[in-house]
Image 1: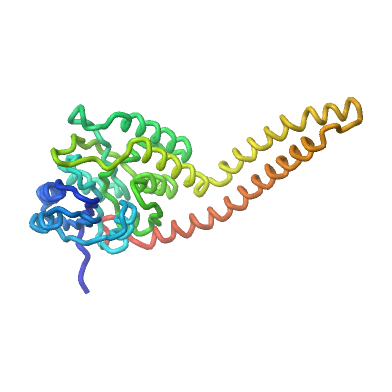
Image 2: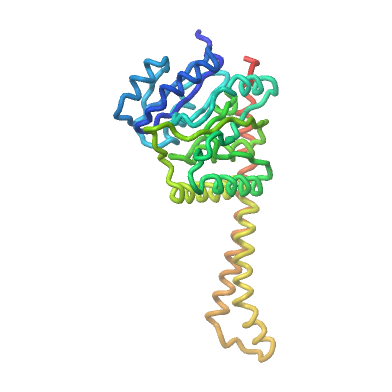
Length: 310
C-alpha cells in the first residue's frame, strides 16, 4: 500500500494560461518535496507540455469552469496537506513553507493567503472594493471574521478538503470554501502574501460585474442553505410588513363602519400573512434539517486526523 505524499498542490489551468509552468517552478522552489498537479481545462497552447517539463503531473477536466476542476481534483488527489493556488502567476508563493508549517503547528485546517499588493495595478478596478464588500457581507451573515474570501491561494488540511461538498461550477469556489469553513467552524488562520499584476500574455478571465453578481447570488443561496431560520425570518418579516400595509386600512375601515368595502385587498393581505407564517415555519423545519446535516459533515470531518497526525 502506497503512502500519499505529504504536501500536494493543485493548480487549475483554465483555458490558455502561459504562466502555469512558472507557477509550478515557484512552488517546487519554495517547497522541494511538493507534488504539483496541474488540471488542464481546455488549453490549446503549449501549457500542458510546459507544465510537464516543469515537473508537474498533468490531468484533464473537460467540463469548463474552475468549480468542475476543483471538484475533480479534490476527489482524485490524495495527500496530508493540500495547496490550492491559481495558475495565473499573481501570487507570491514564497510564503508557502511558513503556511504549511503553520497548518501543522496549529494545527489548523485552513491557512488563507491574504493578498497584499506588491504592484499598484495588481487589482483590476472594482475588484478590491468588491472583495471588501463580500468580506464584510459574509462575516456579518455567518458571524466569523473574513479577511480575503476570494483569495485563490490557500493551504488546506485533508479532513477539510474531503468534507467539502463543492457545488459551484465557476469562479465561486473561493466563496464556497470560505462559507464551508465558517459554517463548520474549522480552525483558520490568515497570512499576508504578495499579490502582483499578471505577467505579459496572461489575461484575467474574471468579468467584474458579471462574476460579482454570480458571487452575490451564491452568497444569498448559501445563506438560505446554511442559515435557513434567519433567512426565512427576514422573508417572513418582509411579507408580514406588506400584509400590514395592505390590511390595516381595511381593518380600520371595518372597525369604524362595520363594512369591508375592499374585499380583494382584504383577501390579498390575508393571503400574504398566511404565506409569511408558512415561510417562518419552513425556516424552522429547514433549521432542524441543517443541524442534522451539520452533524453529519462534522463527523465526516472528524474521521480524518488533523495535519501531521497520519
